Length: 100
Image 1 (cartoon, rainbow, N blue to C red):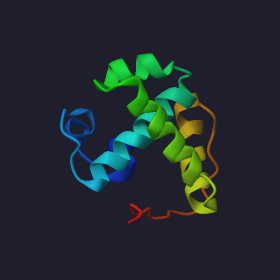
Image 2: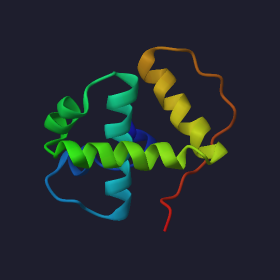
Image 3: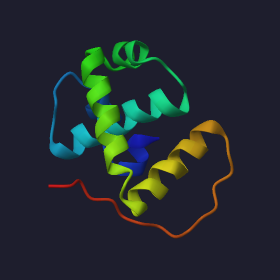
Image 4: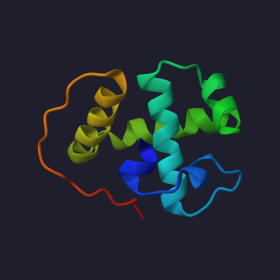
């Protein structure tokens, strides 16, 4: 889902290399969604992504901090609802850019 939502190749998100800022951001979002929407432990998310538990914790904190932005909050909430099977009300398509 994150791959589609951010137009980043799934192989890049799951790959061993950090990749570009866009890939790293997409990976952080994917890790966060696994942790929050699927209620997986940080350890299980780390194993799924081939990363360290502290890396997943950092990703989750980073995404949580970005949720202070209203547009980002709505976008992440919509992804969470889709993953949880909750209907999403369309509020218009918005583009998200990786913060510099």
